[in-house]
Length: 135
Image (cartoon, rainbow, N blue to C red):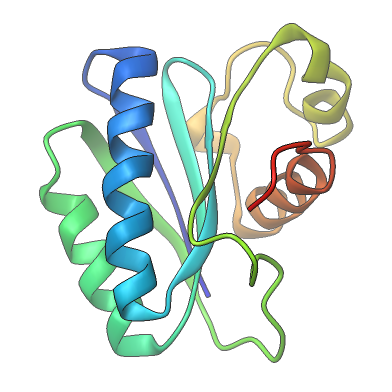
């Protein structure tokens, strides 16, 4: 599993849709699953899959002009995928989910400097469970 955080360059919702569309295609081919959280300024993403595929995915993200200040939080082996049904789930933060963010210590906009691996994974799991869309 790999997790990272980054800031957006521009384009907000358009960027999120484009990222999700391309990611789903790439991830399916590489056996990568995961979940992307976006609050209008910052991305948090959890990725799962084979080590080499995760490395290639992270290399692509680091080169992607829609991301800035990419920081890998952790890369570590896992026994079971949390997002096995999501080729790439995506979540655009809305005020209705503020209590979920608050429960993870995030009040207001995401402060990327305060997001760690455990928070990223826990938040993505909580949001994916409440995501009414099918994977």
